[in-house]
Length: 294
Ligand code: MN
Image (cartoon, rainbow, N blue to C red):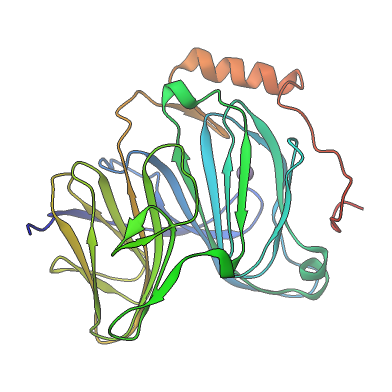
């Protein structure tokens, strides 16, 4: 089988996000093509919070895309205007379809606020096609033990959250075809990823460097493959490594984005702000088992 060509490496800079946490963000940045349908990838931390210092994102809106939160360490309490509630713990994922609009908060649990501790995880933004931008919001939350996982021949681990890698099918029901997987490889070990023809294929190494179809990438340098047909072979170097695999069907539609909204036209962005300011995206009702809104 043919192999995808590597178009380039995108170095991720560490920067402070609005809520005050440090993220490593390979995109959006500069002139990157071939990442559609993805809009943003943030690696949150890893950071060690002292007691009382953990931070997060209080109530804010989204419309027109999906936010995916995948945690490796720490605890994030999610709450939204659609009645969604969940505590995301290490290995767990939350796939939130903002669709027509939602207001949510993403905050450390009260316990983590009080005691501090390690926080590490990812937030991925997945675009919705024009026909799906105004679908009703929904929330899919899965615990670590829900996520299909398998030991690889060389002793590493494959976890497939969405889509399919090496015959293992993920658990999330995506709105358009998307693959999201976490692979841990021992030194020198490989995994083959057969990406659907024409789909976007990205590899993000976040612990140590990796070799993708013969091209070396250091930790934090996202590998962008072409969109022809063929497979992607991910190989650890002399040290074990951890990577995210991101694949998806390109939407090939115009993008108008501003802050928390991603639509197709500027007029739709203006409408989103108007709707939010008029309260039409709802608000969070502070009831339920949560601990950090008292
Ligand atoms: Mn958010």
